[in-house]
Image (cartoon, rainbow, N blue to C red; front, side, top):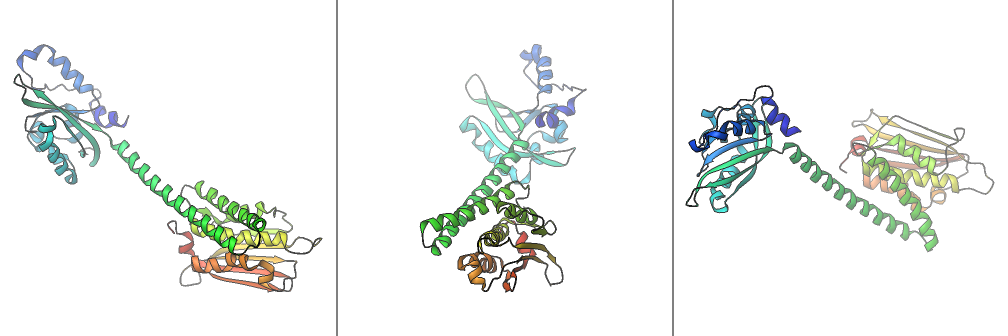
Length: 353
């Protein structure tokens, strides 16, 4: 439909039929042919054996604003995008040998003052002796198709990038988990939890038009996955902050380890801990910082390593520091544990990292 609107619609209500020059023996069907050409959603034209234009249809004039005096000879090249003119001329130089002319280039629309991609084709007309005497050609609007193809290539590149990143994260998770597990059963249990967290983060990312992840959704999804939803025991609050995928993955894994600890650490019969999770933006620093505080109360935790374990601390504390330039701290208090992370907001929101 885009082709019709840009090439045919200017003629609506006034089908101009300036005659295409033709041999006198064709005089009978000329008027019918001219009317037919004027209804085509194409730009139609004729050129001599060397590519010099002789005639163009009313659609060409309406689309480009060129009159016959403007486009004859090589004047039509003036409405071809400067970057595409060489390709058009090269195609003409090869046309006689190939017995065809086909090239894609941009043509300027006079009304909108912008260029649209067209596929231009022409076939030779032969004389009685078999030599080429002229060319009949059309230019078809392919601008929408061209843009869709460009978007497709861009999306394919983004998909390949994401797949490589995903495989890299899975490989790193498996190696890091295996290094700290004594049995295959322990590895399977811990690796399964971390992969599920990673999958949830990817799901949040793909549901977003920007590919970013809302920190509020990330926190709430992790809490729910660990059945931490009792409003009397759990409070999570903070503004909507969009994260890049890498920051979302890192923070998601850290929250997973903290939530796993909250539901598994302690003696049988102990009451569940109280959790307070707050996040926000600190504008007092030279560059804005994303802040997140996880506070677990109701447990007597003597030692952070004992409380979280070496591997969990690796995900919660060290990975954020090395991967995201974050400042992290874990404190054990008489009645619980506090995890505090501060990282550059720009780094956290970077969609390309």
